[in-house]
Length: 194
Image 1 (cartoon, rainbow, N blue to C red):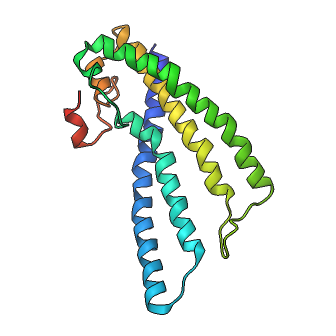
Image 2: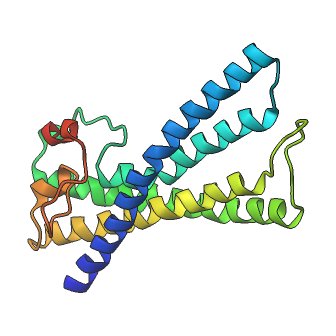
Image 3: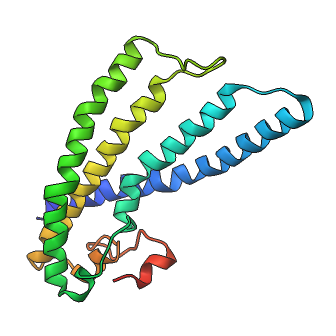
């Protein structure tokens, strides 16, 4: 179990670092959007590339941030029933949900999106818009994002099994922290959850 928890910590560290890094993409999107609007209004100059790069950056934030969001336990949930259950029951729900829904969904998207990316890459596909950008980089974000989400799902499974076996603190796990370290990967708002 110690080796698995070490693997879990590594996955958590990767997703936490990616989550912190992609925050800067949001600022970059704002700057590009502002410059694009100013160029269009003040100089009547514009390019579809500016609009497309904003979409690409949004896709990067959304897709690459999914694993980090799962790490912090901040995906949207409806905890009307489970929040009233015992911690052990909540862990069982987490285990079943990850095994039945999260990992199969990630597997299907990975299997479907990899050929989608490869076709675009081998054709050196460009956007059909005038002045458009290469399309394959944004298509690559789909399998990358779901691979990170699946890896985080595996990490969550390891931690849940560890908690069910009494090896890790389940309360810490349900709050979005790594049970082996107790360090929260979430925001201040996630501290009061569950």
